[in-house]
Amino acid sequence: FFVEVMGRDAGFIAINAGIGSAAAAILIPERKTSIETLVDKLKTRSKAKKSSNIVIVAEGGQSGSAQQIADQVKPFLPHYDIKVTILGHLQRGGSLSSYDRLLASKLGVAAVEGLLQGKYDVMAGMINNKVVYTPIVKAIVDDKEVDEEDLRVANILST
Image (cartoon, rainbow, N blue to C red; front, side, top):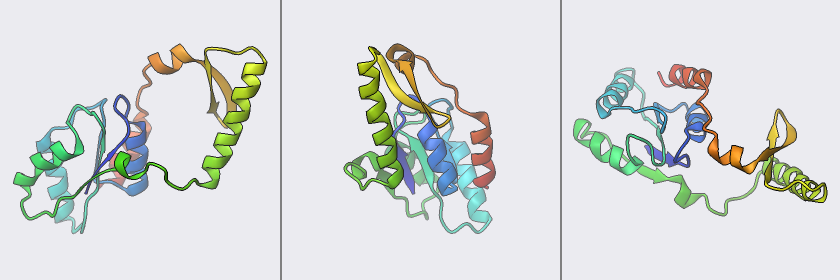
């Protein structure tokens, strides 16, 4: 399965989804993964008797879309039944979890209180389970680096 997740400019969602699903591979915008490397990884897992593989692909990554990557992999693994799912097409309007409701409530209150306190051009967010206000410019301009430890964990789980 090739599963495309949000993350046009950053692989955080893809990495977390990959760790959570013990994906065979995670393709993120911050790193280029060759088709040959991906095929080798899938073949190695097949030799290890893995009955299925999940490849998480961040949308807009350097390697291409999930469909493009699947199309490139297919000739190398013709016996694989390759499926592609684009989560952005499926998850719109999904059911909320209790955490989603809690987070939305906290951030909604923080946004209104921030306005009442005269805070403008900021976004309310959570860092270390505390509400913080981050300047919009900093939130949208600053590139955040991928956590190397998360990538290490993902690699361990993918074998």
